[in-house]
Length: 145
Image (tube, rainbow, N blue to C red; front, side):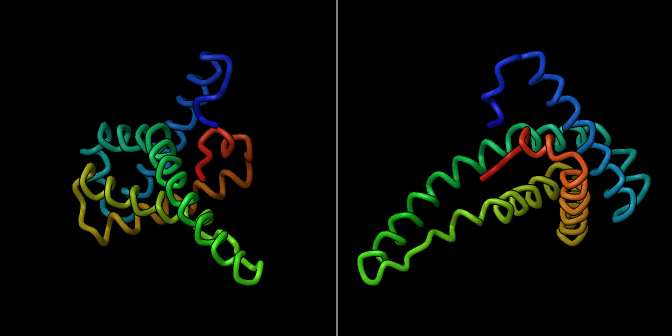
């Protein structure tokens, strides 16, 4: 979905808007969870993290989900052979994979402890899903799964 937009200018504008929104969320999260000085010292790295989480993480998660959906579909097909009740639940795993990748990248890029990275990532996703509820058009831009 991310790279299927027809107009490159429209894509760049949504990319900038989404990056700015995620940057502000992460900056506030680092400020609240870690400290104001850490947030001001790492502004560029937080901006880089926001860009990576908007552009690259959905692509990586989609690639991982492609493989997991093949595995889940094969397992569901095996269950269908037995009694017809197979279902692929691995398709619901995308937000968890996204969170774990965001957690790891936040830890290493912003250079904070795992505990702080956990809370920054959770707070970021929580606020981001609130924004997705308010402006659902943003979700179709950074859709994963």
